Image (tube, rainbow, N blue to C red; front, side):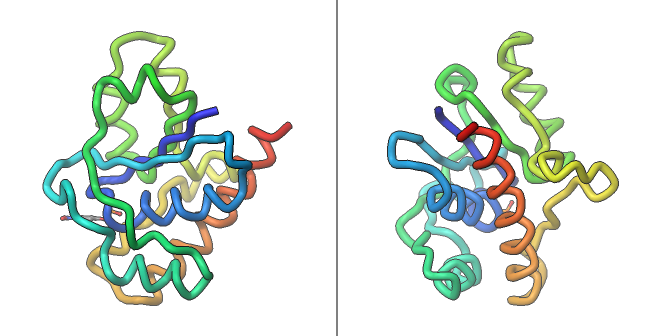
Amino acid sequence: MKILMVCLGNICRSPLAEGIMKTKVPENFFVDSAGTISMHEGKHPDKRAIKTAENHNIDISKQRSRPITNADFKNFDKIYCMDIDVFEDVISKTENEQQRQKVSLFMEVLGDHENAEVPDPYWGGMDDFENVFQLLEKGCNKIAEQVLQ
Ligand code: 4NP
């Protein structure tokens, strides 16, 4: 099972989602993350994301941002998008129904359609990053339940 977490810049939300998800599944699972923009390509996660993960004993400091590629739609089984803009952008890059079926909104695993977005903490403070961490942790627990069934 290969799981891809996707946000806009791949420096805040999806690196945290990748780090958290890796703690929930066995080592034969492959978990990665990507962004819809390449602006931060090659950069490590935002310092505040690294610190937030570290507060929960998770090391995301070695991750590097990369944009999503066409190959990802073939290689990954599940692609989770952090917000609606990201979801729409990712869907627009799919080439067929089989690829489209792999893509979903991360928050939908919580059955939460009203509040279906993981808010972008980039312009916020550490509290916003911690809030994102809590949402991601809840979602990752649900995803783990689903994929480990
Ligand atoms: P992310 O956060 O999508 O969670 O990685 C952002 C990172 C960068 C920007 C916006 C959001 N940016 O505008 O550069």
